Length: 116
Image (cartoon, rainbow, N blue to C red; front, side, top):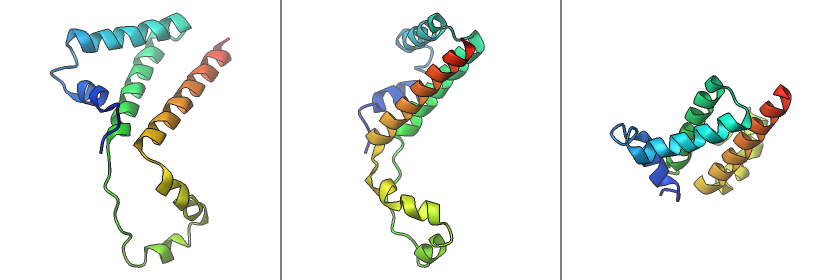
């Protein structure tokens, strides 16, 4: 299953499409926004790659699988991970994408504030 953002990941991940005008237009828009916001060229390049990586990671779907025998017993040694089990089970790709965007944008905003 893919999220509504799958087209973006496919475009970004296909080498033959990455240098076409449409894709370069997306990169240009991102670069313009980041540079005008005050990010350096180095930060802008890195942030652009980070955003692409986030989109690609968000559309990757891993099949659910049944835990192997003994997994729950081993999990007992990791109480914090064990506590997250229900939350992991509830999240889907779109939830993860939205959370990632919120975290990335919040981090970018904080980075700009620190630079004053």
